[in-house]
Amino acid sequence: MASWRLSALPRGLPASEIERLLARCERQTAVGLRDFAVLSLLARLGLRGAEAAGLQLDDIDWRAGEVAVRGKGSRVERLPLPAAAGQALAGWLTGGRPRCGSRAVFVTVRRPYRQLTPDAVRQVMARACCRAGLTRRGAHRLRHTLATEMLRAGASLPEVGQVLRHRSQLSTAIYAKVDQDALRPLARRWPGAGR
Image (cartoon, rainbow, N blue to C red; front, side, top):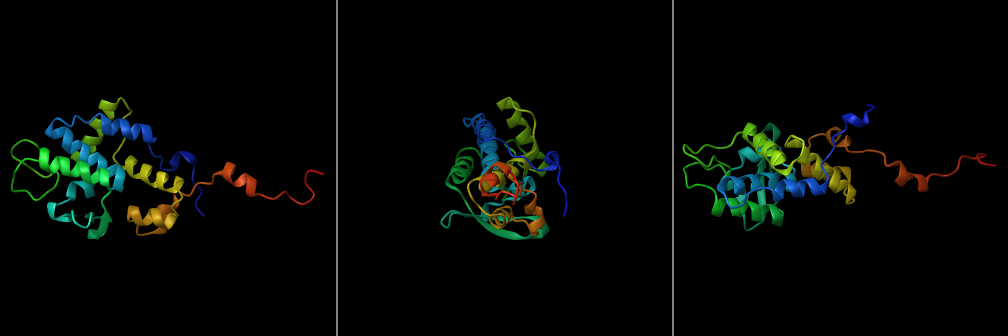
């Protein structure tokens, strides 16, 4: 059994900080619409930066409300597209994305139009942290936030692993922290103790 130090466990952001990240995107500009859509997908779907960067227009099934995600090992998995993330994506595609030959969802807003790279997605997160007045954090932090919020809402570890598309339960197990205060009422007194 691996022993985890608390500092080694992934920590998410408070919901208020995620809302600040999203609220500070200037949605009157093409860059702001794009950044808002990228951050929304990272936060609401738990996408990795490379997965967001790799999205193609054909990956979105608007009628089914799904998005196909190409993850690690070239696996393609279909995920439901939450309404808030879908609206952010639609805003970018209809109001910000330049008309160009690229089939990538996320492209640069100036010529020559190019697909965003995973590093560019990291820069989107860095700029968002700066605008929100937060310490710079990586895009992966939004993935951890989704996992911890799901657990707080009562999801099981296998459900979290399915949403995060983990191949191994060990990858998801790092979110299994013991909440001693919640367990205390369930514990029985040790026989003979407290007499």
